[in-house]
Image (tube, rainbow, N blue to C red; front, side, top):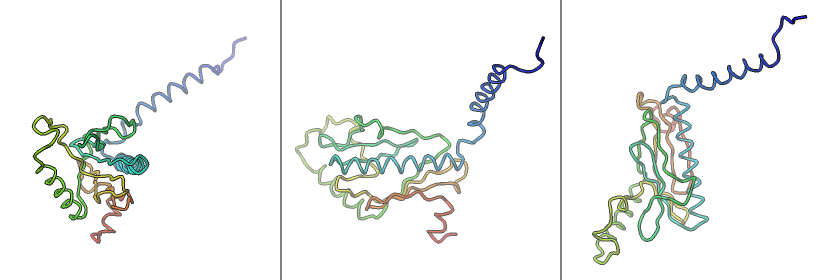
Length: 194
């Protein structure tokens, strides 16, 4: 006697194939510069800066974040110069989608003036270990400083849609270590533009 229904194996096979098809198709439905992806990129950056802040406090070492055209990378002060972090798996170089622009706006000018004065004092020294033989990579400095004292250089890092400048999320960094992510709508309300 022959049954007219489907077997459990056939039904499960169809469900697995539907699941695989959904997993392949769904990510392509969301544009690369969608608000969700912008928020994820901004939240990730904020979380990594917080992790770097905690590591700096716990290990007593100065860290920094250098922003690049397509992402950012963490640096550490080691052997009297800024170097890319190699020893930490979490605080490594991160690349962003081409659909996301990264804008950096330094905070209070007093911080930058103090850093520039220190840099000038260091470069005026006639007797330096690196001098002429220092390569370009080792001359790069962070845009954002995370000091072992617990201070951070205040700044705003904006993750903005490449196709629509009105869509963005800003990571607001305060010198006290407070880091918040603000959407474009919230930004307009807090800055008095909306």
